[in-house]
Image (cartoon, rainbow, N blue to C red):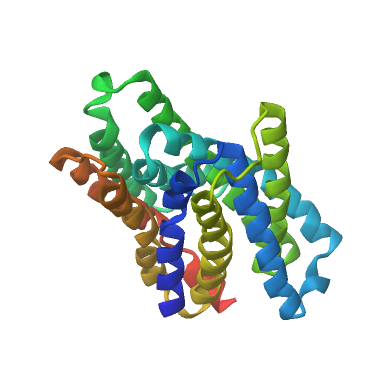
Length: 288
């Protein structure tokens, strides 16, 4: 369980590092995913798993990378508009599009828990951003939209991984590494098209982007992947909620985010909905 907790805490600092790095959105994504992917590759090489990078794994990694790139494109832009805390909270609403897309396109039956989870999460979303919507600036509203698009693309990314793992039974860390490297290439191409500079302007920026790629991404996801195998499902969902919760806390502590009781109530309600929606399926998967 300690590996899972440490991994969730490390990843919670991701949005903070994005802000501290001060790099253009797609450049930050490129360094995080490509650098993190290379670090994961080194871990896999040490474990003797490079032979598991089969053509099928690479193919599915590239498919997942298309959606993962969309996730990062919108998430980094959301951070710029609404801050690291709210952008991360909005991105974790992926449980809703994940369930809806699964039901519509994969003909999976909507689990009964989702009928409670979705209204709770949406009520939390309304309290976080809906109550004061008319008072927000155009940029802030755009950041909220970007955050919700992050959730949508992250759901598609998770579905693509789920499909690939069920179809080819690939090693999850190998597939995630392939997806990270391919996503880094896509984001790098976006940065070139947008004319973004790849120059890292200061030691502070270098330290932040290095921490993001090597610690938050590579080490964080490695620990989570490892910890998932030894923790029961209900506890997994609860521990993983540390990531959006702590990201929101870091935004308040490090960047002075102003909050009010209504917004905090919305955060709490959304977390309950996300937790309920994230449950189910793990017990069967572990038994297999």
